[in-house]
Each structure stands twice: as structure tokens, then as C-alpha cells.
Image (cartoon, rainbow, N blue to C red):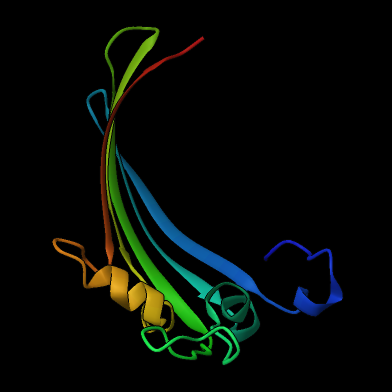
Length: 130
């Protein structure tokens, strides 16, 4: 659930997330998969993505989102290199809510060269365990 807002004007927004995950082990490898969904209420998205008519411009017209969902999938793997060092890698894909992407500013950013509407992350980490 989204944190409480300091002012009463913005405390009606709701953010919630749910995840399903599964871990497999193969020798010393740990393989982790997850599928999740994030929900954003209309009030929550209004706070971050609303463009009121008084600040709208010719290029970025007024916009008021409805509620929306992100869908996220992730696969990761980890392997202990030594007793104190851990190798990890992951790939994560987020299908960003249409209500977020319909915002004129976000739509403009998505139209920039080599920029996708959705998010794909890839990471390789080496961690030291204390």
C-alpha cells in the first residue's frame, strides 16, 4: 500500500503489489523466477502523471489517467564463488501500464530514438558476504 501523504489532498491514492515466485536448486546454483503485478489507483497516478489544463502546453496537452497495472517478470541465478563471494545475474521485464505511457510526456520519451515503452533490465553482480 502506498505511503501516507503529508497533505490531505493526496492521501487517497493506492498502490499495491502481488508476486508469485519459485526457486529451484541445481548443484550450487539457485534459480529464481517471479511474476508480479503492481496496481496504481487513479488518485495515485493523478499525483504523478496528471497534466492539468492550467500547465498544459501545445506539445503536452492536458492528461488525467485512470487506474492502471504494471506486469513484471524476472529470472535470476546465483552461485557461490567461494564461501564469502557470490555471483548473481538477472533479467527483468516490466510491461508498463498503458495509463502511464499515455501521458504526453511519457509518450514523447518513448518516441525518442532507441527507447522502448516497456522496461528490460539485465544485471550481473558479484557480492561479498560478511
